Image (cartoon, rainbow, N blue to C red):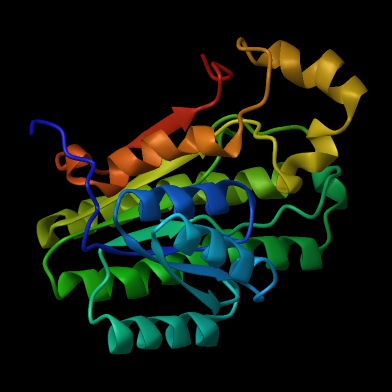
Length: 254
């Protein structure tokens, strides 16, 4: 087989997996054979995703872990090491974007909370994940960034800054971890029809006058449309790919 997307026997973690892109990614990894640990800041939504994965014949375990709290990240990886003894795939998908407004009006609270989850959390998830992957000599870390990290969106300045940081973080980890057999790449979704982006997607006037004209394919993505790129990055099909940013945006950055 020239291209192999098989993940059988792999242990994966997907953060922010209770809905949207994270849920779709978790289901896809499980469908291709991985045993998936799904996390969210609370257990809300996780049991339903876990049940759906198991009903489809996959393996999944739910764990609450707040991405912005280092002690909870430490606890998660103690659990993974104790129960599985290894980690093969880490998908850093958890994020927040609760502030939609001018950058000069953003408060310290907005800055701190967004940075804690989107950048600090992903940094320490990657750090702990890499240390566990080093024990088996290989692994794949996939950071879900955003096209906003390349082309900041109006009224989303703080969020865009964090996603630019995630892209830089991806490249930094990729350079340092390549010699340990660990690949680190980023997925850059464009506008996607999720609850996370509902403030934009559900605004018909904003969509028709502003957002859709920026997307050559004239529609937002569906969460499942991110899975192909993630399966490539998670599997041995991408064995010579690291430090890359894969854009899935309907042509918005073209």
